[in-house]
Image 1 (cartoon, rainbow, N blue to C red):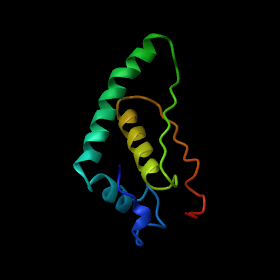
Image 2 (image 1 turned 135 degrees about the vertical axis):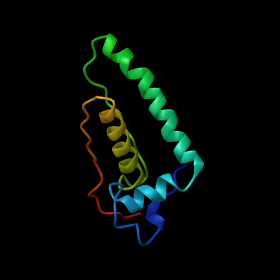
Image 3 (image 1 turned 90 degrees about the horizontal axis):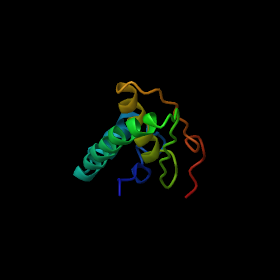
Length: 102
């Protein structure tokens, strides 16, 4: 449901780490902002529950068609927000360097 920067020639070669791509994805629709807000609320609720059970890790996976734009931007956003809340985050972008062939 998030707009796809792949179809914008000036954004296609960039990634979800580039500010232009992030702005394109998250400022394009109110639904994108609402999605992020609800995800943040979800993790604010869930993480303390995991901690109480003694869990030291949680894996959060985000995917999109090519793995270069939207999923990267969302994962980076999550890591930033979770880091601001005092959580340690490791971000891995599996497909960010893959050639776009679709």
